[in-house]
Length: 403
Ligand SMILES: Cc1cc2nc3c(=O)[nH]c(=O)nc-3n(C[C@H](O)[C@H](O)[C@H](O)COP(=O)(O)OP(=O)(O)OC[C@H]3O[C@@H](n4cnc5c(N)ncnc54)[C@H](O)[C@@H]3O)c2cc1C
Image (cartoon, rainbow, N blue to C red; front, top):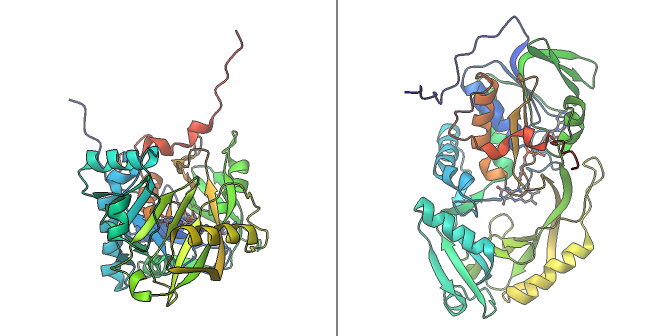
């Protein structure tokens, strides 16, 4: 019988005296979770961040991100019970409240493949849910003005992660477990150096480590262009969220109004009152506005106007004039599957990029996976959080000859 691979990474002993066991580049959700798990495992960790910890210029800033069992494909959905556990473990360990359950309403026209795929995934994994037609939806949630051909799925395991607080907590806990944190420290380059890595800082310093994890979010593209001999197609897009006042705050409170995701041409989603008293946070995902992560963040008035129209059409209890808006960035691969893998030639460098608009909930599990990939043998992908769709080699173009 073939031996069953262990899910535990191999015991690690540094190949030779290097400054650190691990340098993590980027203290967003992904990098801070990787630093936390590695420090907790007893490794000598350095976490480098170009801006302040919890800054607003990347993808992880903000008061709320959705966490949910409901997915339209089974890979990540199957991990969700374990992912919820990891967040609760962090809450217990840090004594900080990070996750608020709200329940989630997933809305679409009856024939929308996304909602059917979500149902199939929930059925296959044995996660319970309730279905409603539009009359049932209007009765249970009169906050929505649902068209007659809509239906809805309610799933209880849906909630809010307090995103910036999660990042700050991960960094603080990494530090408590012995990690060194350096904010305001831009990294210029990450290079293989024998079987270890060399990390060059903008300030002129060069650091060495046995392993590096590259978790640079929207800035990943420039590192990957230097490190790989094939392109990784990452798109960085402008996104924004806005807050709208409601006439009856009790009707939009946690416990009464769930998180919702409505499958229009793009996803229109929203939260109950949570961050700003008397207001709900809403957003319409968009794919068209490609941006340079170094360009100044501005609120886009056309997108704001589109969102106001959706509020007027679907949420009669909310005032369609926004009271506040915040820009943010997505980094996406063409299929929105994340990239999490060792460098094909230099496995001491592990890459984590392309976390799209769905990545935050998974960061705590991705951080654990990254530590496992960094400190286990190349070829060993036996982690509870590994998915084959993460492989970076999927972007290597196969040469086909014309017949
Ligand atoms: C508006 C919006 C709503 C979202 N909603 C949800 C949601 O509801 N649920 C969900 O699960 N996900 C959601 N997401 C997606 C999720 O927030 C992201 O997938 C996730 O935060 C990505 O984290 P990251 O660590 O990859 O990137 P980032 O948070 O951007 O972190 C990368 C870090 O690397 C640092 N860095 C980059 N280059 C360097 C360098 N050279 N030197 C040093 N440091 C460097 C950056 O400064 C940054 O801090 C949303 C995203 C947005 C923008």
